[in-house]
Length: 111
Length: 115
Image (tube, rainbow over all chains, first blue to last red; front, side):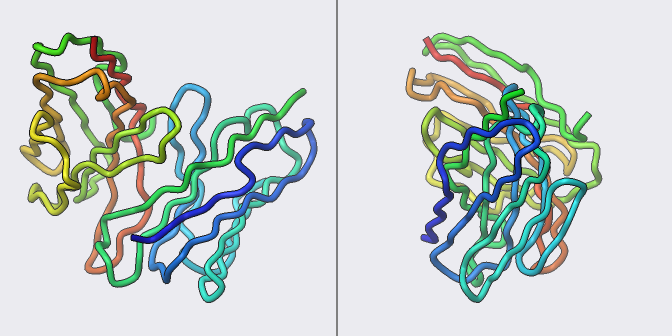
């Protein structure tokens, strides 16, 4: 099946800093989503972005499908950004329902 | 309020017990999912229902039994579980139109401990 690798596995920032999280995948995809899991376990959908660039406030994401990677940018980080960020993809030609998740990036933002 | 509600939030059960997890989505979606999140492992898809029909069963042991009575409700019936089944169980929903399956929305999860 498709492989999803996220980097870095852990990231510690001071409040106000910017960061870039990366998601590499091993095959062509027709679905890519970024999620944030807060310290209480709630998973929030940040972006549906199988290709192109999107922005939502301090967050933006870019997927270059032909090169099999996606980037999540967090600007002016806040303590509430702490948690685990997951990338999930669905393989083109595979089941439309089956998202494969990466292991995540654990982000800690210190005040 | 995420639009996907799961109950209970926490559950402790013995290996001989029978319990059920409940999920309800208020988003008008036509697909619902059960995922399992264990410590140190990526989220694993367990079951998918589209228009109440099961479309995916990801080789899940028979001690987990899903039920989808309508497109808004999803249950996961549990019986004779093992301690290694302890995990966070997450329900999700999405809207599928043809080949397009867009954003997945998750509930808050049920933290299950099997003693």
